[in-house]
Length: 170
Image (cartoon, rainbow, N blue to C red; front, side, top):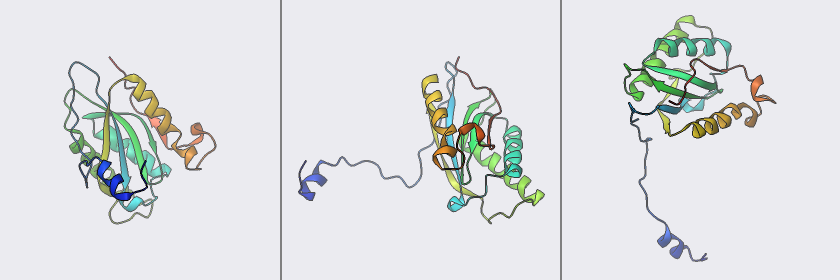
């Protein structure tokens, strides 16, 4: 490795510079489609970790039934979830916009907690998982998020997590 910064720059492989994540999940009729999704609050404000929010998120996900939510963890400023399309699915981006909108209406109507004017970041991150090993790997990472953040000593003690549907590989 060279100490010369000019030489180091020459060896750097340029890649695309994205301001927004790339999207577009290919839904396969032949294989299972399970997507790992991360959605963040606007400016990473910490307002998600409450029983009232958790209940309304679950309700919004049930209302937005074009995709099924499997396992999930709701952190104070972001959500990790796994989702799979139903036979009458819509594109993932539209589904996320729909449940975010449903949730926002439910939580504002209830007026249970003080919320910022804009609740969500505009975009989200998604990754299609290719096999059950990746699903298990991601789940183990996600379920330990509250422990890594110092919120609980054991992942099973975090109250804002669950599984709405069992997502399986065919």
